[in-house]
Image (cartoon, rainbow over the protein chains, first blue to last red):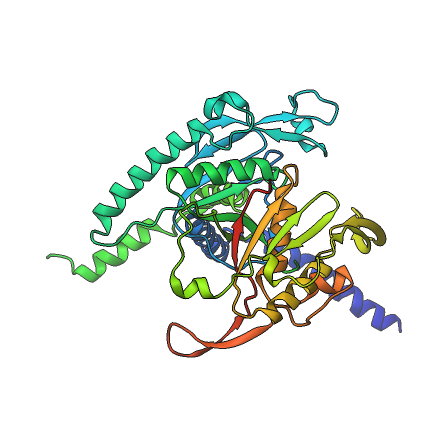
Length: 205
Length: 211
């Protein structure tokens, strides 16, 4: 028994000696496999980001609605309706008025997260400065300009093919139907009758 | 005597040693988290909607013989109201009111609990629209109108209820409806091969503004 203990003790001493000897071996860390992983990850991320036509960032001003729809987005003129602004092709066109439930204007970021807010477009931007009008004048001007540019580009890239005026509306989930109807009417007046609404794909409806 | 090419090559490799990847790694370590921050972890799809046509109202002779259903879903704060061509309506449509549903909610700690919420009765809307489609199988268009303060996410869910046919003709529970899979139909694809495609119900959506 004592002999066995002595052998175990000797083995432990040998192992203990072996440890520091391996550390002494000053080999640089092999990072080749790490590099492989990083390169694959980098290529994947770059391909994914560049294949996304709009690269929508969701924040307190823009939260997309969810839907079980499975139609892929197409190249089109994007209209972004957030809780603070309306943008066409990333260019700001008009601001969105936000009023809280207690009747004051949204100022802080936290105000936009509250439920029961009212979103609208100021009547000064509408046709004849009329509250009841559905035509947003700065938006119709900007859309007409964008359609002309898109037509010229299409004619130079695909001569002979008819031009299809298509727009994608990237809309916050809390935007009221009134504002959507105004934007749809304005887009129709500018010549965009084929509309697509961007949504987040959800397996459940 | 001139040295052979192979010997010279060997020496230059010896001089270079192993490539130092630490600098490239340092760039990658910064670049990858930056790209992950920019990357969207959700899939964006689109819902097609047509703007209402404004015209003289002249229809082709062939179409004038056939009365269009002109099915309209009006979304109000209380629920849904269905309307259709008066001549094709035998009795007035009953409104589909909002009701309470029991749903499973997961809290921040990941624990599930049952909650009672009031929501639009999407299962009943789907059931009603399915019966319309069965009665008028050629109809593809649905008009969607809403009260002016109805938020877009409600309209988007209403379009979802009308677009595709699901595996059952009717639903009562919200959980059964939300988890339902679309019914499929075998069609020839672009490459000539048979493909399983979702069965469409009213896939042409037109936005209208109710007076």
